[in-house]
Image 1 (tube, rainbow, N blue to C red):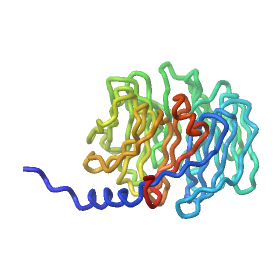
Image 2 (cartoon, rainbow, N blue to C red):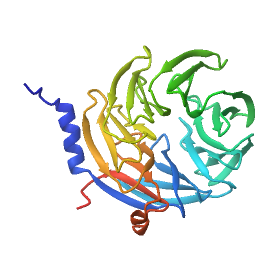
Image 3 (cartoon, helix red, strand yellow):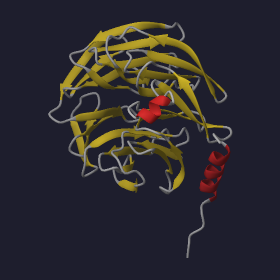
Image 4 (cartoon, rainbow, N blue to C red):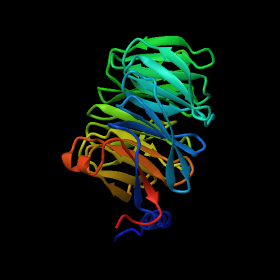
Amino acid sequence: MIAPVRPELLELRNHFKKNKKIRDYQAHSSKVHSVGWSCDGKRLASGSFDKSVTIFTLDRDRLSKEHTFTGHDGSVDQICWHSTNANLLSTASGDKTVRIWDSRAKKCVSKINTKGENINITWSPDGSTIAVGNKEDLVTFIDTRTDKIREEKQFKFEVNEISWNKDGDLFFLTNGQGCINILSYPNLELHHILQCHPGTCICIEFDPTGKYFATGSADALVSLWDVNDLVCLRTFQRLDWPVRTLSFSHDGKLLASASEDLIIDIGDVESGEKVTEITVEAATFTVAWHPKQYLLAFACDDKQERYERKGGSGTVRLFGCYGTNE
């Protein structure tokens, strides 16, 4: 006997039948590495291989380019907005610096020199600290009140992505052995090692409700974890390639995951079932749900010739707009 579909799942599926249009926006002259929304959802930022950061403003389901920040001497590999100040944005770059930008004042307000080529960045929930990781697996903690380096910690394993939990008292690192190392914060002592996947653990994302976190792996699986009990609740198995990026919706009901697959999977967090999928024409390395509505920003790779002929290079896309692409 087939179990009936939950009304909430039907409602979500019906929403995306009516709101599945994708809008394209030219943001950069080369590949977009990272997209992210300000905490109030009024702005979207993108960082690119072209060394710039572009800021868009959102009006209903349309973006308008507001400003482009320049100043980095290397690729902007990851961006991260302040969790409560909607104007402040931080960027990690291969030029061995971290920069903090004020989107309202349209200027760089801080530049912090670091020891290596930076590839990932995260802002603590209280906004007091930025952590940045580099290619040599060194994580640097920056005091945002003084713009001084508070601490550096060298790891002996491949650090892929870093994040605080929602309370800010634990610091998570995904690694090349398929594990998550969980450190207490601020003393950075090892709290727990969680074996998550048989393959490299690539990305991690916490849901806005504080109940879950998700991990994406080279084994093409997405795992959903209980934050408090550190137990795996379910896995999402609809992708065939290493999972590169994850994002929870504002209400914690949806989880978007992407890879080199030519789809972005959007799953129901409570059941693991598919809600919808977005067809893409190249690998996707960054996705970000809007903090208040079902709009998903994403950017794809530029490598496929067919895609480049469609103007794929440097494009930011917005899914969930009213209507269809047909």
